[in-house]
Amino acid sequence: MEHPYFQRLRQIKQLGLSHLVYPGANHTRFHHAIGAMHLMVKAIDVLRNKKVEISDEERLGAIVAILLHDIGHGPFSHTLEHSLLDKVHHEEVSLLFMQELNKQFNGKLDTAIAIFNDTHQKKFLHQMVSGQLDMDRLDYLQRDSYFTGVEEGVIGSERIIKMLDVVDGNLVIEEKGIYSIENFIGARRIMYWQVYMHKTVVSSEHMLTSILRRAKLLYQQGKDLFASPSLKVFLKQEITLEKFKTEPEWLSNF
Image 1 (cartoon, rainbow, N blue to C red):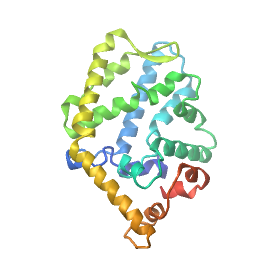
Image 2: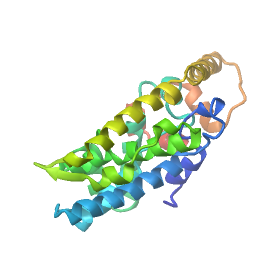
Image 3: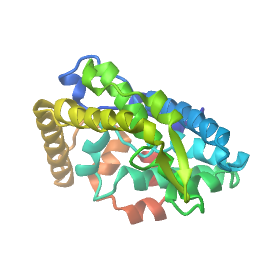
Image 4: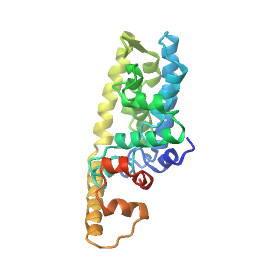
């Protein structure tokens, strides 16, 4: 967690430009990553108590996978994906960061990467990181609801986690937890209506995307712009996933 790749998440807002509408929404990806990790620890304990076989190595792998699941987000979250990068999604950058960290930590992230990639034999571990009832959603709905003040987004994450189980290798919910799931689905829908897709937020993100594209065009035409050296690298040329993979300096600039 002390690594610069992870600490940079302290500077990246969880909700991009939503603070323009909801002034309290200044929480960061750093907050979210730690919260999702906390829920993962709880969920694994619940499953283990229900006799689901999860080794210590798999437990650690799942915890690391959820901790680093958003490490590939750039400034303003999704806005950057549509302006400075050429169809490079944050999940792909997250994987590249994890692979680079794996080199630095001498292969200790092998299990985490397999879980993140959904190549691990126990599919339910990946479903806890990225699925319909993953720890990512259980954390961000609660967190975003709290910081925006949109109370309709509140969900019973504690109860949902207690109702988790594994059947035929897949993550499931016990029947008595169905009402908590209905509330979860409804809360997610309301949060999309009121927060994530709020017209002012969406229009602001479109404006920022247009500004960045315009800056890129002007810089490539030879006009010098006020920008950090790393930003100028991204303004200078199109950055593809292949360049990220083959030229390590792009990851450092990112």
